[in-house]
Length: 259
Image 1 (cartoon, one colour):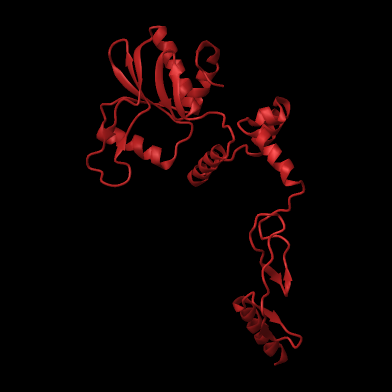
Image 2: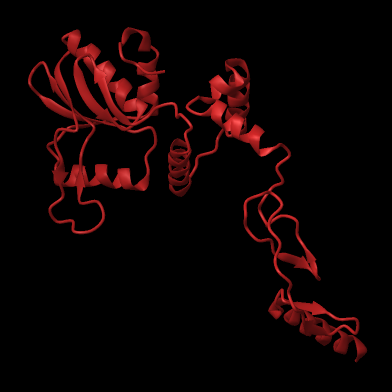
């Protein structure tokens, strides 16, 4: 009987702990009573935010998630200023950067991030760019010979350089970047249209469209699937990672190639 009473009291105490607010403290007799919370001190890291109480009437020195700065603010600002508009290799050196990249590559071998993770990585890269960090490739206007195009990735720029080489070698007639948008008439929600990356005109005047994709998310798969259904006569060629790496072996032959 005593064990049953003890277990009931234990469950009641757990429920009481879960419902209790931070503004309540345990008194000497085991009961809970309200406490008058004094003025919250500022966080010791210098962020200007207020700290929170963690246990009893003891205040934290730092707000949760904040880390103590071991160096003066002037040193940190000087370091950020020195790293601004510089790549990782320029900051730590090529040798050290290569060692770190190899370690990361070995640790992530066989790992395939999900679509949600890739979107988060893209958002993080945009934030780093807005904070002054120079990314390896910036989306914008670039010239392939005398042709000015807006590319969204380094792969698109490099594939355009490869197509320009084919054009100068007279293996193709011409190439164009995103000249046409195909609409899916019966689709009213989701993927309603698709704009391929490149339109290639061959020497026999036949036309085909090339799509450069390092990874295929669900959105891109739906585009290609609906393209084959609603525009079956259009020839589509997917330039994936394997095809791109085969072209990359001869990158020295292509001008305007970005490493």
